[in-house]
Image 1 (cartoon, rainbow, N blue to C red):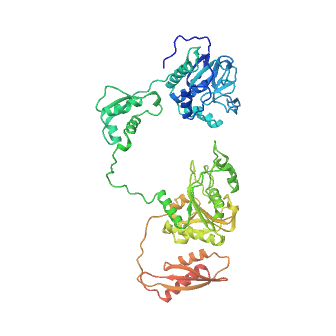
Image 2: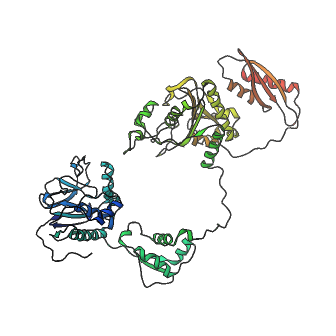
Length: 612
């Protein structure tokens, strides 16, 4: 479409633009417009495109937008008070009313059009306003198109919640070169369909950027990426219809390609050109080939390896894995005792349900349990995922401090819900010990010492006051002092063993909760397997009854018995009556048969260690 000739300039218009807001602005005044019903062919095309037909003036703007891919707008010329359009950033608190009658308060720095009096008459690229919209009495219009800053358009749409056909196009940076095509096409339709006459020159304000440099494409690289060599003429025939200009001075090794204006935002390097060639050629036409070479062995000591191993272990234990949201509400944090001042708040939350990054998996998994436990008598849930803590914030379950710029520790949390809560506590304890066995944590120390359950829990833990006063314990690891450098921050002096709390277990409401720092847990894990040959000599199994104070924990007693001698292979509690406990002890020497005297000496040693 060519520009109109012999144009009258009887109706002037002044446009003042800020190039930072609009890359290109075009405007023209059209007089003697006939308002009415659009022709049938235009109405049909609009309706098939999902656009409702209104009248001649509005339909032409929508038709041009669909045809050219660039939004356009129209003002009632007589309602522009000073015949001036000032494109400026909006001020915070300014109010507008759209042509649909909806009121909005602007947050500031939005792209706005002022009529020269300080009053906003349009949000360009998003929505027109009621004070400049065309009416049935409109005879003179200002046909207008602008190429806006996409980032501002996107932000305004999100802030105000306005999403239109035009705003969706503007958010994706339409080609400013297309704006002139849209303007000329609109003028043509207003003259032919609405019988209008051009009453001003076309005001075109465009600070054209430098043309991008042509991209040189290597034919060898095309072959490398595609896996086959394409003929030169085939490459030219693919790129030319897409708007790319390939120079005539072609060599066997290189092509020089000029990028069309509407692709300059996404085609900038050699690989982009190769992608276009491959896309049109067809990925399905590229023959698949099996890679030649030996597969790289996968490491069996990575974090991902241990995550998979733990997930499988819990799955076989009847647990269902959850993926709860990383965003939690302020109310949920308060419910479980977390200090919101120490939690990471989202600057621009989408809803009140996701104001904070979760500092623990506990709120999410307990909430999921509450929503599902009424449907089943027994429910076992677990989650293995990251939590988010501010620098030097005490971890929620065990009091460990991580001196890292950004804390994103991986936590393992699981819950058990059963009718018998007391029994569930010991089941959870057994699951933790089974998990230690699966990870071979006993390589460091004897089994029960490697994963000892202690009753004491750090009262600074946010959920400490919500746990059962008795059915609660911290999960504490022991290591020899020579390994204390592995983040044993709470080790003291020159003791032969160091202690580190890595989690907790306790009853919350009517369920049992276990929360473990997974990153710390896998530091103790091992992939090493040991082989113990079948003993040639039979074991000696004897029962030993001991008088123990009622307040004594049985676990440490069994640990003491087992560590009294290397010949003690297994200890189990068989019966209990008041303060008398009967233990079944297995004695065995792999090199010889044990005599009654030797077994008796070990028993005396056990009594001495237990101070009985």
